[in-house]
Length: 342
Ligand code: 13P
Image 1 (tube, helix red, strand yellow):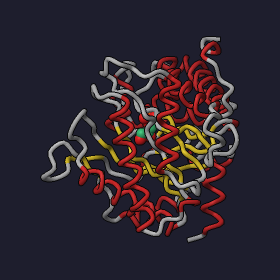
Image 2 (image 1 turned 90 degrees about the vertical axis):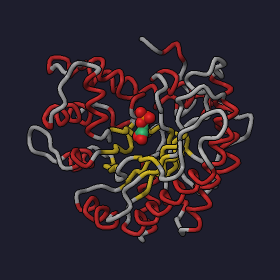
Image 3 (image 1 turned 30 degrees about the vertical axis):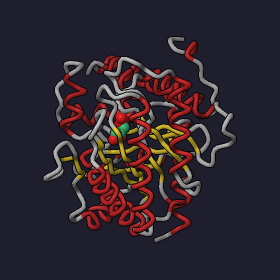
Image 4 (image 1 turned 120 degrees about the vertical axis):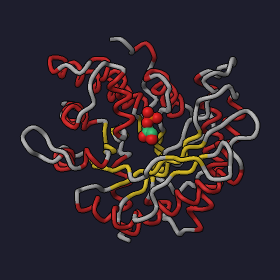
């Protein structure tokens, strides 16, 4: 384990104003996104779309790292420059999603567990050779108002995350550890806080047991938020307070950065929430960088502008830069909703 390298990569990803662009949609997921704009998902359309994202001028000011999918890590620009090389040359660190998706956890109705540990050491070595410097593994924690997830479901996911994180650090990749408590459901924000707390507590206990170096990793959590179908939707300040309270209780100060997922929030809400957390000083200074690792909250406006049409490529890049800029401002608590649409 090269500690100096892990620390330097982890800190560079969350350098001032910067966050992560999650462009690691698996082929079934990107197909869903392309379906929404009536665009066929082919190897070439996926390549071209990612090329539009990665060549957008100016994003390097706000994007410290990009998470790629296996196929994308092996693709190139029209001129033949491999995407990892292109990103590195722009000062953006290439990363790779290494999990193989969440499946039903056997004999535990309602719980899921993420697969992909078998052969992971060899795959991580290969990804490093291809230029990746960090990795991501997402645990999916389904939630309802009462009995999902089970305590065992949380433990199984925490264990898998820790196995993954230790393997990453062994080969010199910074692990992004993502325990995602989903937004889907009618549960209230208090329930989300309770489940997020249990998940974070279990994850850090397992990371510690697996000898993971907290200084050389990043945490990618959900925000503490009301379920999408909950009739009582907590406001921006309440989300920021509940999320901070939960993180302060369960995340070691040694972790350099917390990069939130957007999880189905609108682009504006995701930026607003991040801003509120960075603006809030009532609890005193926070030990971590608060940043973003958004997929949908960065890309939804881009897909909207692109519509699968080459003639819209420049507009799509402009939409990406706008979102990156606003999230860059939110990193300093300098964003306001009034900036939208200008
Ligand atoms: P969203 O921001 O769309 O939730 O995606 C982030 C991600 O990488 C999920 O694993």
